[in-house]
Image (cartoon, rainbow, N blue to C red):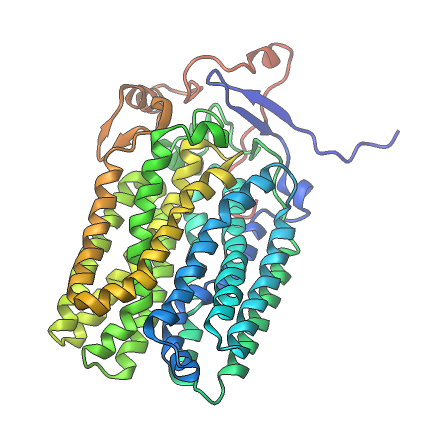
Length: 499
């Protein structure tokens, strides 16, 4: 009799009600290592980030080519940001209902990205380009972004921070060559050709990687990490002690009824608005401050580079220090950077401008992966596409505020008042995080060394009791009956990078 090709697995249900699906090797599901679900999304994100991080360098040439005003040009980025963030929730809901695969999302994102650049290359009509670049481009880039971030978290539930941070970073530093291209080799005479070629490049890269995207089954958990005794695995213990798994899988309807989700949404509104403001107007502020063109272009490239590497770095740090503590620090850094940039610009100090541009770039990107991994830490992975999509939708408000409203505010109040407002918004985001314990008093309910009773008890049990350690969720697993019948979880294998 032929052996079944269906991978064997066992479901373990803990006393908190969370179910883990254990036993399947990723190669049985994907046909390759799960590390491919880091590298492929990373490449796609580097392509999609051109929309957000390179537009500021291209804006002056587009204005000269089409006769656009400052508000016209940055209305495109506002509309783009609105739809880029807004598509995450409906796309996530469709994915969770199995009506929309990650492969389909990537292929549609590739097609819409090409339409966006063909539109802006060949039109010049602001209304047409708002629809072509803003709406189509925003939806396309949003599908790519949401799909890439969610798929990494699903394949690495025991160590999301560094992986999600790395992939998220590609969204920023993938645009660096295009910042130089648009800064030095983009003109009224060649703008149509350049933009068309950029659109083809984006479409090929996004579609080529997206063909290999596949989600794991719901509740999937790596077989080499015992979900009840994860402290036996050195790498998992380091990550999960500071960032324990969610006590249960929250559906979208359950998550939106918690105060935590809406506090995270409000904090992302503020931080994304500040980030968009820095990306959109740093080059213009550098020129308005009397700096040479190379200062403006290099500072924009530095912002994108540090923005991307900062996303990777904070993911790694948060695995060791905790998500919320890391996110709070990022908000403070982002606020201080806004004050520093405007001080250096008004003082005409190029050295300080570079320094604060680097700091602003770090803070302006580092919060995105923190929200992306804090969401499944609080609400679980099964419905993360819609839960994180709801939180990420706050970016659409930030985009509108930093786009056309930001340009109008600069015209009315100048750069000093606008940068001070941006710094204040980042501080408000940090204040909101103080009131962000994990839902249901889960083991992640902590802040800056102060923990809830349940968190202290859970951590004390994990650190003090010798093997075999109790379940991090407390009580006895529902899988005890399985053990009495002779079944035991897979023996944890030593952690290895190429799983």
